[in-house]
Length: 236
Ligand SMILES: N[C@@H](CCC(=O)N[C@@H](CS)C(=O)NCC(=O)O)C(=O)O
Image (cartoon, rainbow, N blue to C red; front, side, top):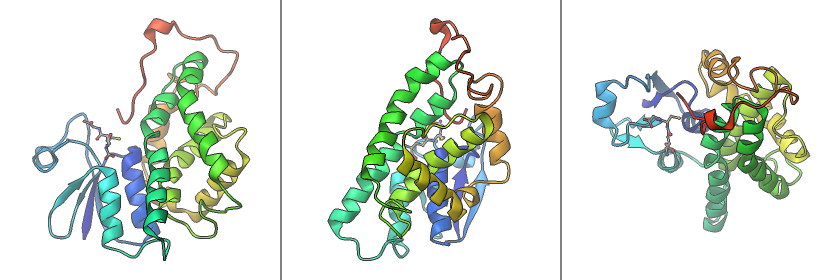
């Protein structure tokens, strides 16, 4: 069976596990600590990053884009009859999501409203771009769930958790993206793609008292001293 090496709150891992869940491909998963990576992992991984997919033949694959393509190579596509152009466009729109994973992590880590506003610009611009591209839904390409949905699901799931915790909606002003988020949550895939500990670990990392979102996203709150604002981070 395929094995995924994971870190609980890693968005790149969630994209991979979401595709496996959507395709109903069974997999084992092993969680590691990124602050104390095990030697067997370092021996296998050229980058020391998760996700890693170990194939049934024992080959270690790395980089989430390459892993997604591998999964598509060994299984039927989510959307049938796509042309090479369709697939290229889907890869481009998927990249528009995955290149914002770390941006969203940094945004959520903001300690005060001013830092949040500064960091969220790129993410909001990405939501604005996809809003223009979305049709009548429920999914990116209409009735059928596809790889673009899987890539954006990661951002939209996290936005939903943030909203549930703080009342702050990252998708305000983007009604089609909001409906898309609901359609994705309704598939159950975002929830299945993460472990039972995900919610608690995610909240502990991004929604504790140390972040503006964690404190309820009060817009009247004073900013921290700018010099102390770091660029935020992802996954510890
Ligand atoms: N480009 C990589 C990014 C993966 C990534 O940033 N993973 C983070 C966790 S979310 C990681 O492993 N960080 C540990 C490290 O860089 O040492 C991919 O798409 O797979």
